[in-house]
Amino acid sequence: MRVVIQRSKKASVSINQEIVGAIDHGFVLLVGIGEEDTQEDVEYLVRKISKMRIFEDGEGKMNLSLADVGGEILSISQFTLHANTKKGNRPSFIEAAKPDRAIPLYDAFNQQLREQSFKVEVGQFGADMQVSLVNDGPVTILIDSKQK
Image 1 (cartoon, rainbow, N blue to C red):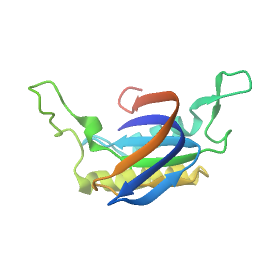
Image 2 (image 1 turned 45 degrees about the horizontal axis):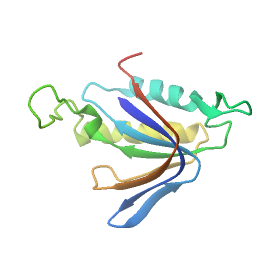
Image 3 (image 1 turned 90 degrees about the vertical axis):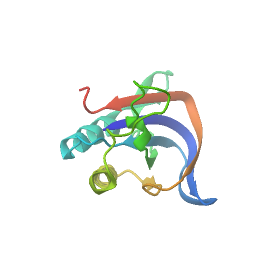
Image 4 (image 1 turned 180 degrees about the horizontal axis):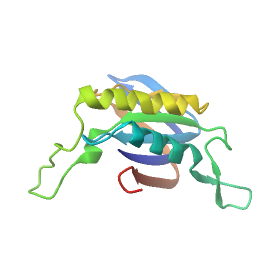
């Protein structure tokens, strides 16, 4: 699994010009699930993300976690994180998991984050979504569960 974490001041996701998920202060997570991913990848990423210290403390150092600042999560499925661009100019997405495999893992990922007491808003898997955010910093971090 690959997750892009974007620290945000405010974010929302819309489908057909209707907001279906929104947060104030927290993380926007772009979540890509690969064919080889398992529940172990979900658990690893939930542990990493829930403890990630990328909010500034009183001294301006990235030392606080999402829980420390009372942050929220906007989680967006993003199969394009598994794009293979080695050949030609058109990306291949054969490494991205098919919906029958990806949806249960994506749902488990979001549920486990909720079990950590985070408010988690989501888009709609497979939908054409528009994501709006105010990137705080900007701070953007990529985590790949296969690169532990």
